[in-house]
Length: 96
Image 1 (cartoon, rainbow, N blue to C red):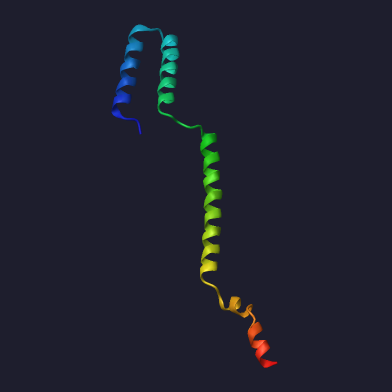
Image 2: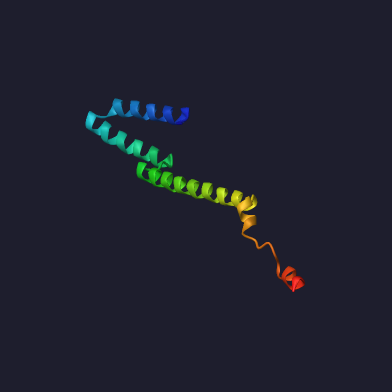
């Protein structure tokens, strides 16, 4: 996921910090540096991911229902043909 250039940059900066600073300063600088790098990676929080996952799940369910409905409308069954009247108005007027 991380490319080699980013990893090399992290290693270089950590090595520079260790050579110049006491441990507390290293920790502080490392946190700032990593925070900046994560910001550049355009990451999302777990909560945002889970919300989008739920939206996609509901969308998939609606799509499946719509596909089934379309298939039902495109392929009428025999019971649908029984609902239509056997005689039309013209047929009734001819018999009288």
